[in-house]
Amino acid sequence: MNIGILGTGVVGQTIGTRLIELGHNVMLGSRLANNEKGRAWARVQGSQASHGTFAEAAKFGEILFNCTSGMGSLSALEFPSKSDLTNKVLIDVANPLDFSRGMPPTLTVSNTDSLAEQIQRMHPLLRVVKALNTMNVDVMVHPERLHGPHDVFICGNDDLAKNTVTEILTDWFGWESVIDLGDISNARGMEMVLPLWISLQRKLGTAYFNFKIVK
Image 1: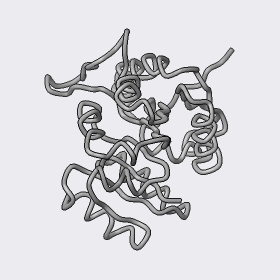
Image 2: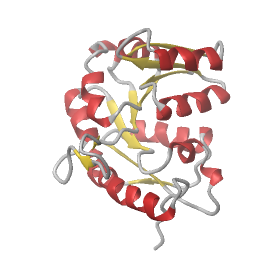
Image 3: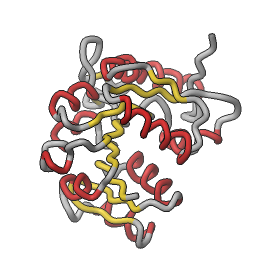
């Protein structure tokens, strides 16, 4: 399958590398076609990897991942044409974190709105599913690296899109427990988990942990 990833940072590269290991073709997208991080990644990954602009990655991908910085996600999604976003599943991994005043970062949107909702409103024909934003990127694509059961959360308005994302999480990445929280408004809680996640990272001294819901 052809996968388009918006973003050439660590998250985009790690997810892209894992998808290539699984046999998929991946294009990383950025604002500039000659983005050096994207070019270097594609050179290392070989023939199944490529890089281009946000518009090119959106056109290329049958499924899309938003791995941009949360503060730049909305502007990144202005580059593709509407036709290249229509009816495609976008897995939104981004978090609306503002690091401009140092650590800990603040959320640019919370409580009554979320980044995922903003993306869905801006692109109503895009099938947005929030997922994988509540953990370290290595855990996203290798959940087996943590001992014992743990959970990944998803939410979105399109049930068929959530079914597709659930299959990606379970069949491709190996997740055993996927919790569907409901419609896209539940992204508010998923994104507001990040301040807690950052506090736990600093307390535990590691990014290799995750949440398990016990009832």
